[in-house]
Image 1 (spheres, helix red, strand yellow):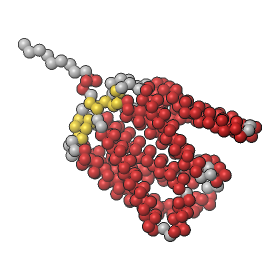
Image 2 (spheres, one colour):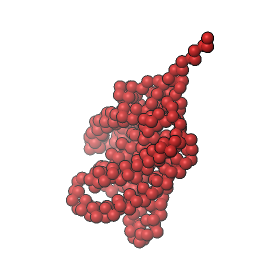
Image 3 (tube, helix red, strand yellow):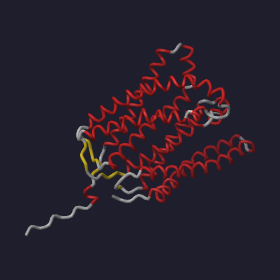
Image 4 (tube, one colour):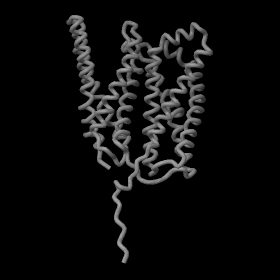
Length: 315
């Protein structure tokens, strides 16, 4: 009589996949290349005075570029991980072919969608700037930007994954997710929300008295906030997770961001009162304390949002 084969636990049968991280770095490289190509085209085609006007808005453009990089990298990571989990895919047999397919589709989509977007923007932008008044034109263009993002970023990645799976290039099985990947997704989502809020604000609110550099500085500080959120999430999660729950993770980031902004609003009101009632030294000290306190608050807020909303379980 033969001995029965031992039962293999679900956690032992799960394998980790590096494919989402590869696609994240590929998306960042593609986005960087598209921004550089756009910059080169502007330099070669614009008249000197128009190009100088373009350079005068460099701080604002840098904030948009940072937001674009964060959005593309975060969406590539989350969409790839969701696709793998939905279809029980562990890895791809030829990752170089998948990455090449994604790069090709991405660049074609960026060119086509960008061309159509610029044609539409040239028709709509004069009306927006004349009738927007106190509303940010970026806010009014949000629906068009969302459609452009879906066609130029999400569609090429989904098509790449779908075509490779249809041709039998994927290895099936149960996957597991490291806390590093989940924490990175949390930090990237926080940066995306932060930078999007900055770009949606009127320029007079974020760059008062013509201080355009404030927008670039605020965007750079957003990277520090995202890094703190990433580290806090990494310390709050188990080493291995059975899956990355995209919906619950997004809800956790939103809860953390809303709580953080409420506290920031209260502290901002106190700082505003100090601007009118206190001395310059007191205001400077309060501003430094304001920034440090916001950084410190991210740690417990990240931990609580993950514990109460995401509720991670070890793999």
